[in-house]
Length: 54
Image (cartoon, rainbow, N blue to C red):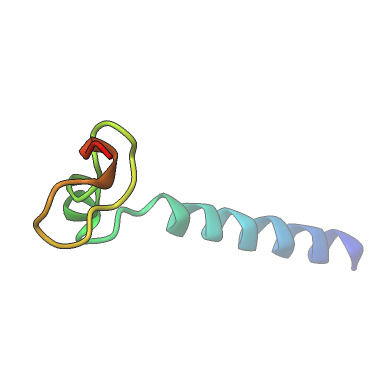
């Protein structure tokens, strides 16, 4: 009985790992919205605050 529970648990963990490796649509677009210098997300079309002086 315990062996069945352990096997089901391991199977469930394997399924969760497979879903975790999937790439969701729109991830590339989110990555391009980051600032290349500091890595923060840019909101709007203006420059990132890390590039401004003062």
